Image (cartoon, rainbow, N blue to C red; front, side):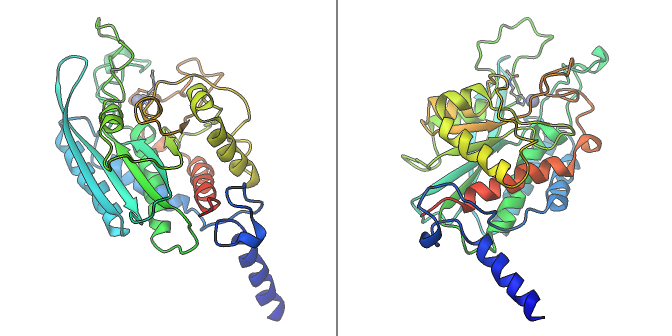
Amino acid sequence: MIKTLLAYIIISAALCACGGKNKANDTAGASAAEPCGPVFNADSAYSYCAAQCDFGPRVMNSEAHERCGEWIAGRFEAYGMTVTRQKAVLRGYDGTQLKSTNIIASHKPERKERVMICAHWDTRPWADNDPDSANHRKPVLGANDGASGVAVMLEVARLLSSADSLSVGVDFVCFDAEDWGVPSWSDVRDDGNSFALGAQYWAANPHVKGYKPRFGVLLDMVGGQGARFYREAFSMQYAPGVVEKVWDAAELLGFGSYFPVENGGMISDDHVPVNQIAGIPTIDIVPYYPECEASSFGPTWHTVHDDMSHIDRNTLQAVGQTVIQVLFSEGE
Ligand code: AHN
Ligand code: ZN
């Protein structure tokens, strides 16, 4: 009994050895030597992923999109976050007026020192990379490409609502209108700005004037089977220190195999306007499948097969626990 108690005390001490509240063991900002923060529950994240898919594809201007957005905002509110719904009408590549809502959920909004975690929540209207061209104008369900990033953020938010050892404030930014980019069957030429419309809008109009978190982490397609998160090139260009911080955290937790210290692709994603327009050093955790012929984003990317049957709890766990580690090892 006493042995068990002692072991518990030692483990608890180890779990708290990082973060700004234990300065004796940790120089502020230095990377943590021990795992810290709460245990990420992958079953919970999986259920948040499924719950979004249950609305159907969350395509811009659809009722499923509207209803799912309210569900997401409601979950963050239930976890005690201050939620901002940033509405705008954005113009798609084809001139369609897109009713966009960026959902921003703030944990401890009064804190000045902050970290941003972000992901897109809309899903692609067209499965234009499907092996069967008969599916190219059908919507993508987006279990991975849409729901997974939000699911990890919701699970982290749930854990933050009862955690007391976090030294920074956290903003969860759910970008809308990411995936209305020019489809492969269109003759419109992509100027490189047709994706990430919600992020472009937010970066030019942040929810708080002069918003400057320490850094940002974008989660895009973080639940796929066989996913490996190589270092993405824009992230290396704009925020190499954040890449190192995150990859070190993954390695420390034993998730090094999910986060190879190797270069992947250069991906135009929501983090590009966040870096270029808002000036917030932000990285992209996005999978890279060097061997996959269908797409370097993996076999289900922009296909009608991006559903829950290809979501792997272990991938959610690797990413979610790494995000927890990064947040809880930030000093005051
Ligand atoms: C490009 O396809 C150029 N970028 C990927 C952005 C994206 C789409 N992420 C998810 N869906
Ligand atoms: Zn997509």
